[in-house]
Every structure is written in C-alpha cells, then in structure tokens.
Image (cartoon, rainbow, N blue to C red; front, top):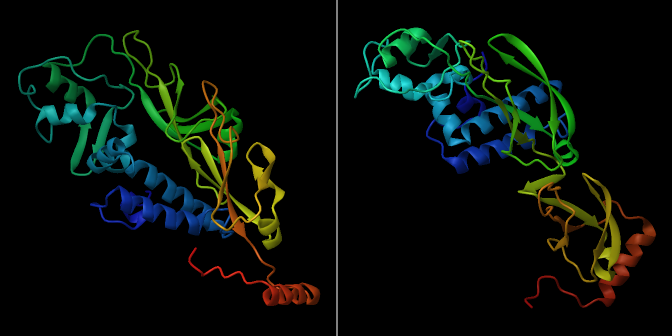
Length: 315
C-alpha cells in the first residue's frame, strides 16, 4: 500500500495550502529525476507529486480524508449518500424520506475507507431509496490524473495512458491539445463507469498535472526561464539565445542589465488554441568564470582599477 499522503509530504493532517506547497517544492527539488540520478528518486518524486496534487485540491483532499487510499474508487457523491444513510451499516431512509440520490457505478460494488466497514453498494442504495436498487442507472463519471512535462503540455499530441480500474488495467489513446495547463480536464466520452439496465456509461476525465521542471516555471500560460549572461553581455548589451519548449528563441539584453531584470517575449509562452498565447519571461542572471584564465584575470583587475562603479551605492 502507498504511504499516507501527509506522511509522504512530511506535513501534519492540519497543514494549510502554503505548508503543502512549501513541502512539495522542497521535495520536488530533491527528488526530480532531472536533478537526482538515484534510481529510487523517480519513484519518490512520483509519490510526492501524487500526494501534493490530491491534497492541494480541497475536494479530493476531503474525499481522501474520509475514505483513505480507496478514495478514487468511491463514485462522486457517495460521501453524501453515506452521510445520508446515517450509520456504519446503512439501515433506513435518509432524513426527510427517500428521494433522488447520486448516480453510482455498479462496477464499484464495495466502498471502504478509514473508519468504515466494507459496504455492499446495493445495501447502501436500498437504504437511500427504500428498497433494492432497480431500473436503469447511468454510469458514474470518473476522474484520474494525467501528468505531463512542460514540453508535452506545450506541444500536445497523442499519448497512450494506462489506468488501473475495477476491471483491471485499461489503456487509452488520448489526444492532448497543445498548450494544456495544470488543472485542465480532458474528457473521454463513454469511458467512465458502466451503466446498468441499458443506460449509457459515464465519462472519464483526465485532470492535467504539469510536473515541476528544472528549467521552466509556469504561471498560467506564462513561462518563466532563467537567462544566463556574461558580465560583458549584461554591461554592453547583446542578443543571446534562450531555450524554450518550442525551440530556441533570441532575447535582446539591453545594455546595463543587472541580475533579476525580466525580459518579456510576447506570445512565446504556452500556446492557446482558443485565445491569446502566454508570454515568455526571461530573468537575467549574470554569471562569471569560475576559474578565469590569466588574461581574463588581468582584464578584470584592470577594470577594477579604472571603474568607479559601486553596486552597493544607493542610487
């Protein structure tokens, strides 16, 4: 069984959104496969990533807190049905009498979770509707996460996805639109829970999660990237290349640029099939030679003698 999500992030169950995000960023930097080459790091990163995306969403966090690691097997609305049943084992109508209840997926015969016995779904339905479940019922919509790299989200394309379900492992061919962003849902019609009595199946929704990237940072559709320049490029001005998910772009660095200056490339961020694309922000970072050669050192020493520039002087 997977570790408890709170334990995976190293936070208490009372952690707020800021604490969750701080823990996630710290662990993502430690375990990201592009940074940590330990073979075990990738699995640890996946565990941390899954834990964060479940707990960062108030709805999925509430379901996880109630049902534990089996929360994805519980049909949408089942927690309301359970609350309405009013007992550890369903027995009797909900307050106010039987009424129209939530849609369930009959393939998910048992629900289980922290503090609950295994519950026969038909018994639960009987307690809600005053008898055994009967008649056609539409299949429940289902939801799963689809993790993408920044590059995959930028380009879009076809992707094979395998998901575990009540019927075992199922594979899907998914079309990913270019420029999908974190939290966006991709609908697979009729691929959710099966209906009964001739009713149609529900839909499967894949919720996009963009994995942390060692180079790029996403803010909506805007891309942020570090732009490394030499002291002379920053002082004199220059046009330098910068890597983007769409390929190499050119950035004009104005003369006199200091570290931290942000340069905007309009429309060079994430694509948007139905509107304005995002922008690319390149943040200047001045780099110096770690081990300057003899002539380089002489030139730096000469510059130090003739220059009256003081970066610590208040302007």
